[in-house]
Amino acid sequence: MSDIAHPAPVKLGIKMGTMLLLSGALAISGCKSKPPKELPPEPGAATSTDNGQYGNGVATPGSQADFVQIMQGADTIYFDTDRSDIDSADQAALAKQAQWLARYPNKRATVEGHADERGTREYNIALGERRASAARNYLVSLGVDASRLSTLSYGKERPVALGSDEQAWAQNRRAVTVTID
Figure 1 (spheres, rainbow, N blue to C red):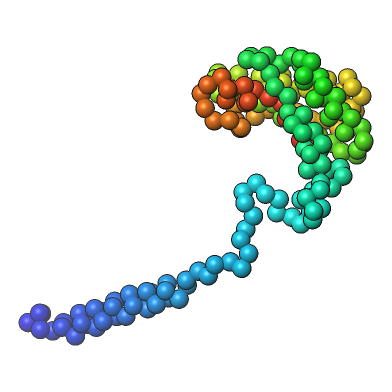
Figure 2: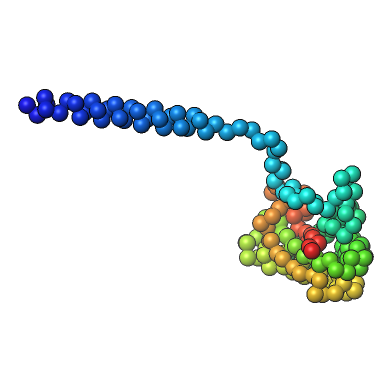
């Protein structure tokens, strides 16, 4: 007798479940995304309207883009394995950086130290710091006010070249000067 007493509630439950399922499907299908009118910038691209360049691709004087454009690669110096000494090529690059910084006395800069993938994380952080400090100290010796310069070590965490060979390692053993406002 219990089988006969409950047929209506079971049918009602099935109908309600079906209606909920259909309404959920309708709600989801109504949420189709439309393509944006304008695509977002590429990762790493400037998101503000002042990206350091005029509309014709010429860098705004005193901007990071201007610094990179004028340095033509001299914003980065390279080191031998397990070394942090400044050689003659590094001295020339740092002299060029010091000239730019002298032209813009209100600009500050961070010298970022990097290492290749070999060695422990702790060792490479310390090595990157020695490299950044060596570059910073040389800039100070050229007349850049020490209060305008900071250092930061990434160790092996931000390689520019992937690979486990001497060519990749040589590109990753570096100090990079980045201007900041």
